[in-house]
Image (tube, rainbow, N blue to C red):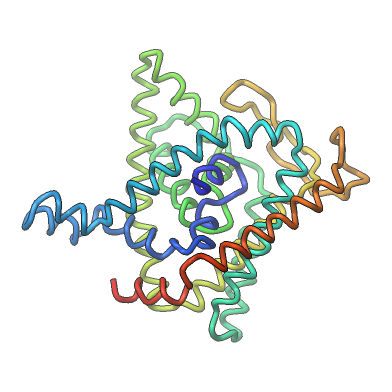
Length: 308
């Protein structure tokens, strides 16, 4: 459910939530197997039940239901809280990501020049993504397909959210408007959504296999660059940010597009909520600590992945 909430908020990655809850490697393996030869072979040999087992269907179904519920919760509650108390909500996620980056960094068994270099590259890349001007976007079907493949990859990439990638590509409003217009019988909107969905499927199948391979082959280096991604994304989650430019969301409302981090004294919002921000930040740290205590050990998950 928390992955669904995270993916509904530009700047928060569902992949981060998957990692700190101990399901990241299983998620990669399950997604990569859906369109892979193992599932197709099982389907041909032994039927649907075997293919369902090979694809870890029960896990995917549970995760999918949880994400749908999480998206509903985000729409009904988180987005309202963001509108009323933005610094407080962002402070919670800021604490969540800092603690998550520390948690992932602790899993790196050997820190060397390569690992440090990859961490720095990951941090710089993620930071740069939070500063660049968005593209113009458009409804060209090839671009819609590519946008789907890139944006959905952020579902399993800690640090950068799919919603934020869509914003950078200029496709956030295009896709959400198309989804809304399907109900009116707009065949053009249906084609856009179908093409986007196909791009998502291809992106998930390819990117999950790439990450699975890197975890098997270079676990420390992969963890290092993912830690860097999370640290670099913190700029997008700083509690006090002033808008540099605005965009129109899927509801026709004007919301910030590019923002710059500021100290509380320079914040242009109605209230800085300093005390509440500190409490929310600490709560984010505590949540990850509790997840660390009760989630399966990452070492155990990594062994499962290597055996896959």
